[in-house]
Length: 229
Image (cartoon, rainbow, N blue to C red; front, side):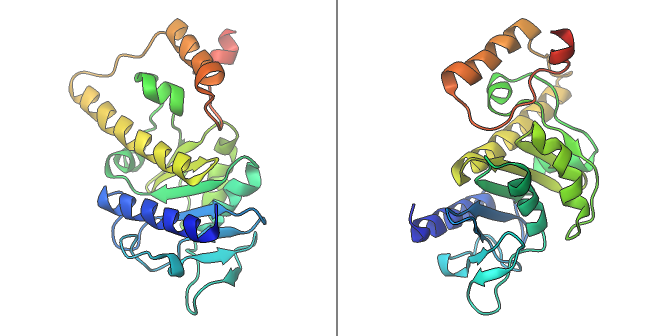
């Protein structure tokens, strides 16, 4: 994909995030790994609704701007993005947002670890709640690092959500899946609680994920799956 096409795709994703209410004001950030090993990222201090291609910046693996309009720089949260790329060679894009329902779980200190919806089981598995970290510091990257080994989707305690993918659209779709699952989980709770899918059926879904759907990325498997095997 040409860089201009990629710039337009990032802007399209940013606009969709804002339209769906996942971000407000200057919240959220998006980055993509480039073929040369550098990264394209959204700049700090700009609403995702106002992002245009020329406002995006290109940074190196240390977060230093190597291409961008004067005065534009990445969010201080870029440390979190760069840790994702460092820990996972398969990650090609990172999306950070504050989708309201999913973030409600994060603020309440609750993970989304039930295996109760087919599509979520296949696409992302359980969704952990990572420990609290002060934004703009290395606390957040350090908090998410252990979870990156098995998870492509995470809730950030008292903060928001993070998704990774082999490309930007995959990372964006995972954020969509997360927020929809959070809404459904909340509704199920109000109706008396979600009913989890039984383990034999989960095994079949995980087999479909690997051998039929060919879903990329990591998956935590079924809770206690290895122990039970």
